[in-house]
Image 1 (cartoon, rainbow, N blue to C red):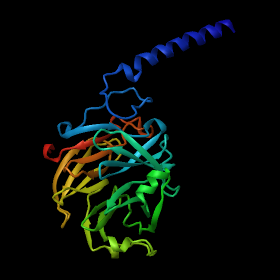
Image 2 (image 1 turned 120 degrees about the horizontal axis):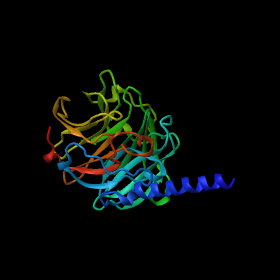
Image 3 (image 1 turned 60 degrees about the vertical axis):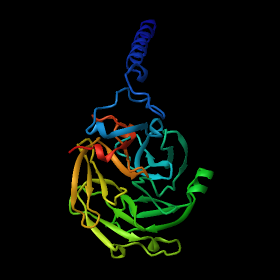
Image 4 (image 1 turned 120 degrees about the vertical axis):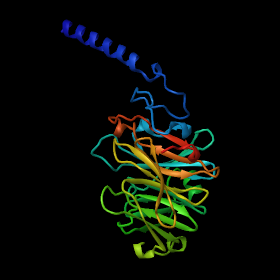
Length: 306
């Protein structure tokens, strides 16, 4: 027993020393706003188009196992929808919307989403209403009351034809745009007028409700419109190269395509014209990926290179 105890002591000392060696504080990580990941000691990876990336914040909820999915910009806040999962087998879990100050990345609060929104892939703001997408479902919510209570306060919910997803959302011109993540086939983006989404109308939203349908490339994770009205898409699938694409909003024609950080998810556009994005690469669930970039980050479209 004494020898065994001595062995345990030696192993414990080795583990402690290893912990000191690989502790995050020992690495040359940048000092970023937010809660730095404690479960992964790696430095941030080099990513494409780094010259176009401005402000960077640690994605909220990482140490609690949250995986970021949806993102939108609402007034002076960045909203990030995430679900809790630490294993590859679990692709749904308790979900929350986190609120970050756009200027400095401060966590302003968060609120829980209903259990039926266990993989909230899309966020968008139409007028003063915040929408959350989960495959086959669309939730509109009272944002101010949700912030006050810490729980989602719904204005209404609508079922969506799964042809339309919605895996992600975008908003422009009084329309909410629905899209589905597809690895194969010919996906589309559907523009549905706001009036069709008002509370009280319980009919499911179907492709026939769209006033405009655009062809999409594959592996789209998020979408937003810039100040000029062009449509931007984020494209990624697992631990593979990722892209940003700029499309003609009337035809869906791809106007430009740029390499982007791996694991990029949803997009939003701020009033100053900068894009904002979030990456799930480096969250606990995807900590085995080569890319470690679990950030909310700002993108200057004018500095992107193909």
